[in-house]
Amino acid sequence: MTFQPPFRMARPIPSLPALPFSRRATALALAAACLAPWQGAAAAPPPASNAAQIAALKAAQAEYRKEVEARGANAVALGQTASILLLDTELGTVGQRQGELRNMPDKGGLWVRGTGSNYKVETANASRFGQDASAISVGADYAWTASSAKVYLGAFVGLSQSEQNAEYGTRGKIDSRYAGIYLSYVHDNGLYVDVVNKVGRIDQDVRFDLPLDRGTYSDGVSHTTYSGSVELGYHWRLADRWFIEPQLQGIYSRSSQTSIEGRAGLRAGRDFGLAGGGTLQPYAKVSYLKQFSHDDTVGFGDSSYDVALPGNRWQLGGGVAVASGRHRAFVDLQYGRGASVSQEVTANIGYSFRF
Image (cartoon, rainbow, N blue to C red):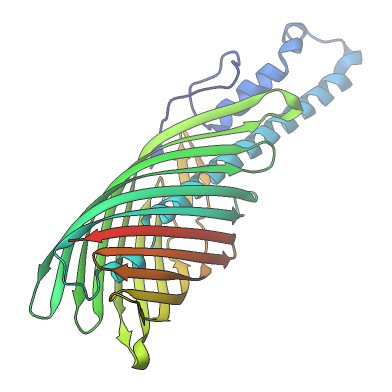
């Protein structure tokens, strides 16, 4: 899919074509600016004695073009990888919400959740970069009770933001807003199915320093994103109020390229009774996230760029959930590590009020 976002430059460059992140346009324009002092002289045939100097100048021009092209391609890959990871942050996991819905004689409720993530990433096409991401979502659902199960239909809206930093002064920023719906089926025997669909809009800016201290190149893009998730799990009750919960999840994300991931996980913990009838539930969890998609090309302007999707990774974590009357709250921490995502640290906090 090809996007043609509005073009912006940190400083004007003469005769610059309005094509973002184009290898040809960027290289030619920047080379023209770099060689501007010699343009007048180049109009006349040079003396033979200057042939070596001109050859060296052409070689320097080629190296300059090559370096600008490499930095531009790296900036595209960084921004694209960051947007896919931000969609992961937005979507989160289903486990926290299922804990709010299970075994409750309610008719629905209101909830709010905040998420913060820190990533250290390096892919085949993006040099090592860090990303700090945050998101906040608010939602509501309504419950229908069957003979041995409940069905919840809900909707949510949210905002998220992330910032990236890498070598050569490369930095980026993403602002996102999104809305979605979900349908949850929770059976009394512990089986649950959860389906989430989300659509969003991101505004993304990226910039990097030009070689030879010639300023900064910047550009931006806005486009629509999509995310979806289907999760199946079973809450297995054990003796002394212990439990284990195996989970399988499929995740679909679209932000200029398509990511299809599968997650297999296990959550385990114990319920403790509190004075007044409340419940305290500490738990631990482990998951393996596998990338199945091979959509590794992104189009910007009239050019295509290789952008590898984030690869497979392990996720370990734990948290505490508290229920008291109509109030539910949780705190959840997670650490992830894989081939391309060398570090993922995520914290979730949420609250819900059940009717």
